[in-house]
Image 1 (cartoon, rainbow, N blue to C red):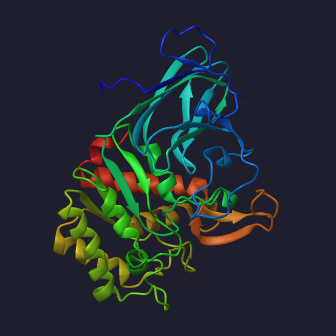
Image 2: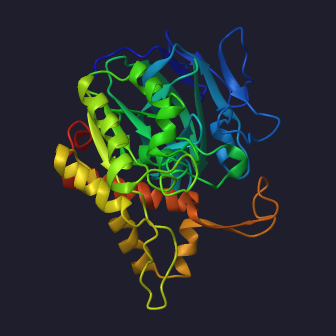
Image 3: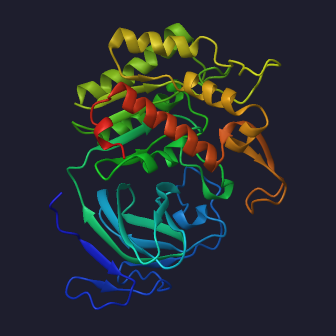
Length: 368
């Protein structure tokens, strides 16, 4: 991109010269310097507070590397070296968003992994785990002209709080499939419908931030089906609310994208997946045709995935956990709607596949 890094942190104890900040991997965060490592006293259970740290989304928990920076988009480069055997590095940013997933490196080889990220609270947060890997350096470059991928959706998309790990929304996993040309700003929240997201002023928050050249991906349906105040009618109010997202994005020079709700893990006796969404999937598809909006049929893609895997193996994609398996979930979970980290990565891969198939403006050029 031709921009000069704002911060260069070295962890390999090499004398890299002017402009580099030498740190140890256990150097604690200081408000005086504005950087360092931090280990929180406990997990966060509150999605709305957004006070989860990326290191919380590993087992066991890891310290998070924090750097005080202005709000905005950044390109981050992590340089790492393989020190033994088959080595790999995983990096998460912000609220547990996966940006490098088991990135491979051979022993003695050095690799530079780049990704983009959005900082919404004045603090850039990273955490990493390496198997046979040494992290040598982290370089951070402010990139204000970088496009942003805004996500609007429900619990299947949101950044799940760390106490629920491995609960993971696919919005936390999509970064694995994107290059450093676009940053993700996930506004999805659990329990929201196309209607309640607007009523709670969440869409207005997106409008205050979105700019020409950005992308707005919209996925609602699970909670539009409810009988309470969140509910909508598929071929009337559901389409009407979705139209507000589409028209608002276009008015601001951004690209709207519709993504249907994925299927829940409910199988018929013949091994096919039971459709629990009724008219909401065809209603979104109809609207996409009418308004000529890019559309990813995640319902069909997820159905095919689940049917290929079968009933029992597909549990691995969802939140089926044993009592005591995870510290934040002492009683275990049995959930056929929400994803494990493995499941979120699988669903995000389907979204990336849809982006490539549709050749969606801006996004298709930013796939890895």
